[in-house]
Structure formats: C-alpha cells, structure tokens
Image (cartoon, rainbow, N blue to C red; front, side, top):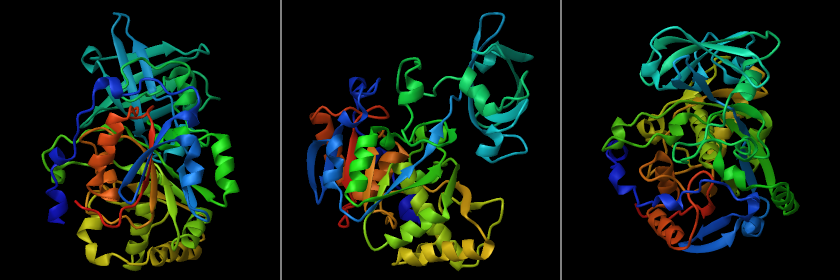
Length: 412
C-alpha cells in the first residue's frame, strides 16, 4: 500500500491556460472533438464517429444520475448575498432519492458562500412560483453547515423546490453565472435519478442519433447510478496521496445491469465516464468482500478509499467470480438492486478490473480524475494531454472528449 500513498501529486499536473477551458458547450453535443488513443497511437476524431471506433458485442455503461439545481441564492435585508450549495442529506433520511421527496422541510449539509455575513436568524426568498423558502443555519461542520429548509407548500417535494428556486451548479472553473440554457445542457439526455451536484460530463456528448448507431452495431448499453458530489472538483492539496481524503458518493446498481456485466466480463466493457468506472470497480470490490463473509442490508454496502490497496492479496484474476458473488448475495437476500456508497480512489499502479475502454473528458491538473486516467493508460496520459493542448481541444466539463483503450503495458 505504501507505494500508492507515497504518490506525489506534483507528478500529475500540467499547464492549462485559462482560454482552453470551455465556458460554454457546443450547440450540438456530438460535434465535439474526440481524442482517440489505442496502443500508444493518438488521433483527433469527431465524437459523432465514436461508434465506428468501438468493438462489436461489447457493453457500454452510462451513469444515469441527474444534476439538481443545488445552488440557492438568498439576499439579506442588508443587501448581502448568501449562496447555499446543497451537497447531501443531513436529516434522519440519508438516502438522496428519499430525501428529495421530503415535504414541508428538509435538512442538508451545505457549503455556504459569504457565511460571515450570516451571523444569526433565518434567510427567506420568494421562488419563481411565488413560494416562500426559508433557510436556518444549524451545526457547523468541517467544510460547511447543516442547513434546515422549510417551505410554505406542503404538496411540493424538496426536489421540486430546488427545481423552482435553484441554479445549475456549474463547476468553479467556469467563470460565469449559470444561465437558463445550462439547466438542459449541463444534463445528459439519459439522466434519470436526481442527486448529483456535478454532471457526469463524459455523457454530455451523446445524442439519440449516436445511441441508435451504437445499438445498431450490436453494442449493449446499460446504466449505473453514482451521484456525483462537489468533491469531484476538489484539487489534491497535500503533497502525497496518503493525506488526501476522498468524498463518499452514493451508488445504485440493478440486478439486470450486474447480469449484463457478467455476460461481458470476457469481452469489452466500455465505461462512459470516471464515475461509471469507479462504480464498476466498487462492484468488483464488493464481490471480493462478500467472499470474505461481508454482509449488508437495507443500510447498503460501503467501499472505503484505501480498501483495495490494503487487500491486494485478495485480487481476483477473474472479475466474473466477484460478479457471481454479488449476484448470489442478491439472490439469497431477494434484492432486485443494491445500493451503497463508495470513496474508492483509483491511483496509478491500480489494475482496473472491470473496463477495457474509457470515454472521458479532459480533467484538471492535480486532480484525482487525472490520476484515474493515468491508472488506466499509464504514463501516456502526458502524451495525450500534450496532443490535446497542441491540437486545439477544449478542456474540462463543457470541453471535448477522449476515447481511451486500456494500456496493458502501462509505464508508470
């Protein structure tokens, strides 16, 4: 484990000029550029050509999480603006889906902008529909506050309140205010389950036309759910990775998806996005834990940040065995889906078990997402990022994409 915790983030950075960060998306999703990498060769393609580059009889795994309008802007009578950014439930209900259905009141852990101007009392705003939403500041925690919300229409859920009153939570590196068009554009076309405060951006390039062409090529598609937290934007500030704390994110997988993964374990599994990849790897490690007698119930399972590195001797050469363990457990417990949380970190030197191909955007310097890419293709990450910088690719959430084939001969 020590070789992983000693990894220095200074080895995983690059110079990203501000003008290369895409502030707006392209009008047509599939007209973005695509960096194609396989066997050490890098080429510039169009995303609309992605189907021609994928192997037949593979399976493509999407994250169907939906971005919520999680930024609430209040204004005090003094004129001071207070921004509340909802991150995760903080009341008795911890499941995000259930917490969004709460009526009349709901408590959330939040980041609070300009908190020094909010010393006491509650805040209030009139929403677009004329409802009154109140916010009261509760317990101070490490990175934010527990905020208690109340609203004056008991027929509306908290999800509906946010949709009415909230703003799109654009990443901090997009230096503009959210616009009405972002509500639709910062959302994948297959988004289904509300819970993310950041989009699974690799999915933003897909259109109905592209999805149809993928299925016509006899490529299966399926979905997992990982609700992306604000921690995805958190840069690594510590010198070595042992001092970096990953964020927990809630995940959900259906029996149908796990059965499809079992079928394709001997073929190609295409992960659309780093969030899908972390979910797939978490399923693998859940199977490993179940082999050792682990059990879980309605509270869900948990995969911790360093678990795979502490138990490297438990690695299985055949991921299908891990998948079988998960399916057997679900059969015995009568489960149609499983849910839990993961804080898994994927670092250079980690052997990705569940995917052979990764679709992803370009990531920030000094980020855990860049480390994940380096784990997938090795030291060639420098090569592809240099290629992107010299060939006019657009970077980060609203930028262009990559299609990366796993490098089995990774140089670290």
